[in-house]
Structures are given as structure tokens and as C-alpha cells.
Amino acid sequence: MRRLSLQFITHCNDRYSYLDSVKIAIEGGCKWVQLRMKSADDDAFCKTAIVARDLCKSADATFILDDRAHLVKVAGADGVHLGKNDMSIVEARALLGKEYMIGGTANTIDDVVNIFESGADYIGCGPFRFTTTKQNLSPQLGLDGYAAIIKEMRSLSIGIPIIAIGGITADDISDLARLGVDGIALSGSVLNASNPVAEMKRIVERCNNTYLYE
Image (cartoon, rainbow, N blue to C red; front, side, top):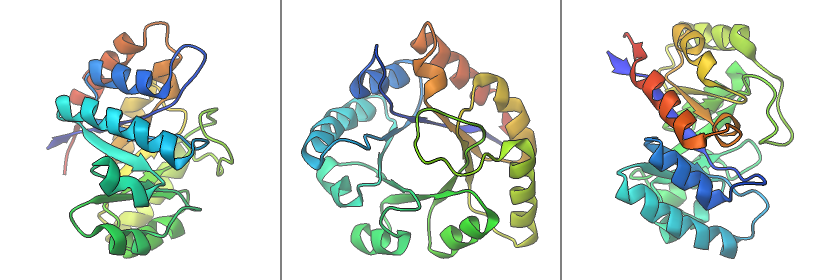
């Protein structure tokens, strides 16, 4: 028996910067942060990553970079999450070795199989529903989409952790956990809340009280 895992993906809006969002996640008790800054150049990204790394380290939180596998060691991150148009998982593994965590993005069972066979550590699967925090969205999965993918994974004996992502809120946690996902990742539902830290704490509590039975 284990708890539903929780990841926070950084974002910015009119009120908060990327680093603000890291601080909110950490203060709210989240133990996994992915730094996503799609439009930033490597220099700006790396400067932010180093500060974010220290914030995560002080809270004993896992710190992952989005996309930029070549900056993982420079930034002192724990690993990288790779989208469909980023460096391949095989290339990233050759660059980073086995000691770093690598995640991949999936939308279909074929994606899942490819990522699993490439040697990733986990899969970010989505989007669950429409979200404004990411451009060029793949088709929305909804509960039925996740149910179908998880059923096919079990039939193929694929045991890699599946993290649901894309427009997820606290109210979705129970339904997603019942389907068999291993965790959730979110962003906008926290930063757009009237009190982001309180919302992060609420989500952390729900995840901590949601158990997965194996």
C-alpha cells in the first residue's frame, strides 16, 4: 500500500514568477517540483534552476528539469522530463546515466509502450482535460482515456508509474486514483487559486490520504 504521488509543474502568471511558484509548492508541502520555462533561454533557465534546486533541496523535494537534459548536471537537478519533441529518452539516458531520473510524455498506449521500452522511470500521461499552461495539447483523455490506457498496460504487463497531468484539480484526485494512476501533476489549479499555498496544502493532504493498493 502506498500513497498517490504528487508533482508540481512550475508556471507563471500576472501574480507569480516561476520561482514564486516553486516557493508556493514547497511551502505547501509538495515534494516534487518540475521546472518548466519553455520560452526562456538556457542562461535564464539555468539561473532560475540553481535557485529552485536550493529551495527544493532545503525541503528534501525532488527537483526535475523540463526538456533540458543537457542542463541537469549543471543545475544539480535530480533528472529531466522529456516531451514528444524533446531529446529522446535513449539519448538522455546515454547523457545522464542511470543515476538520474527520466520521465516521458504520453497520450496513447503506443506512446506508453515506446517510453517504457526506452527505459524511462515514469510517464506523464495526459492531458486529462484542457489546460492553458501548455501549448499544442494532445487530445484530451478524460477518465475513459486513462481507464483504457491502464487496462492495456496491465494486459501488456507494463509496470511503469503513470502520472496523470493536464487541467487536474483537487476534486479529480479520487476519481483518477480509482482508475489506477500512480500520481498526479498539476500547476494552474494551484497558482490560480485565491490562496495558492493553502490550495497546495489541500491537494497534498488529499494525496497523502489517497492510498493505492497493489
